Length: 344
Image (tube, rainbow, N blue to C red):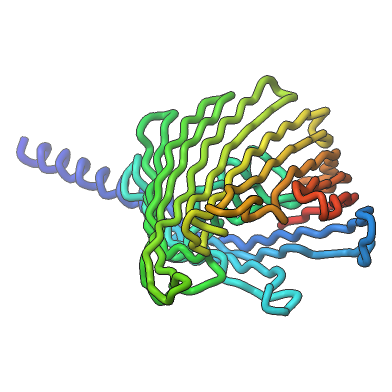
């Protein structure tokens, strides 16, 4: 009997060790290289324009993702694009991120991380290679920054994201103030509906006309809702506000921006889509001024076109882009584009 019990015990131990060995063998560290390019040709029909047409590569991304273990993933992405300092193409570190799945409901990310301010809006809009989402297009926030964020699954349909970052974006290092930006968002998702609320705040030191230093808090607020009415039609709308800033990284007391973006897509079939978008950007009047402080850039934008996706990883779109200025002394813009996205 003792030998029988010992034999059974050894079988249980062996079975347990075999199960553990199988579980360990199931995961194999692996990595993947990927890339993406945004290419276009445009013809500028604006009256008085000098540069009527041009071929452009606006963005090229090159990245690598490595699954270290079931709980840890590392990723790096380089963004090659225009540098305002003068270089036509400069490579920036867009992402250098470690993701740690701490539990089934909490994921922590740190390093140069991708941010959530307009990520859901950008995915729903669906045509980043043609035009950025509203908050990105008009300087309400950055798509990546140095810091830490936590994604929390509250229920199967409700998610939260909270973060602490430098606040200057991925093209700049931390400023001399050394103050961070704090923010959070709440996202509800089901099969047809997505709704999102976002808020952040970043205190910066500015120098007033008299030479005195003053702390000003720049805040961004956003609300977004998108709905998939059927297999062929979706529509989204978002409202964005920037308080005390000419840009997310440029504090300016009492300088506010706000705007609305509405977009929709009709899917003809798996390869063809018809899309349209309307943006409206405005600003406030400063005390003692008769015109809004951002009048030269305020106005309405219209984008509409048709996309054709002939193969996986390849998209092309013929589209019209126009901008109607609030300042009547500035000529309205009118352009025709042929945009391409190809990725691997």
